[in-house]
Length: 79
Image 1 (spheres, rainbow, N blue to C red):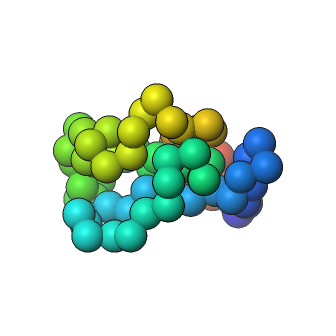
Image 2 (image 1 turned 120 degrees about the vertical axis):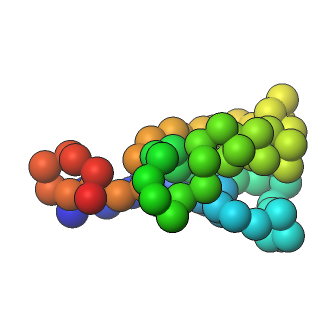
Image 3 (image 1 turned 180 degrees about the vertical axis):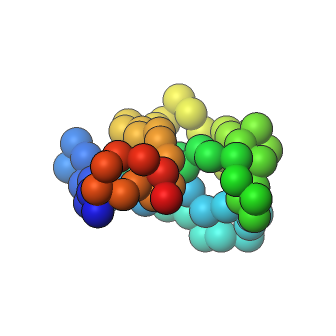
């Protein structure tokens, strides 16, 4: 299993949550945001997830951002 980045540019890495509009989020510049995009059964549609992120987190204040699959195996393929 590949470990996720826990910190980026001195900021704690925080995954933007799926399926919720009520999560308490830190200020946009207080976290290295992790966006997990993959359209699988049971996941929030990536376009809805992305738009919700852009509505909830002011993009102009984001200092660090990672984008990728939610899970990886040791072979680098989404599980």
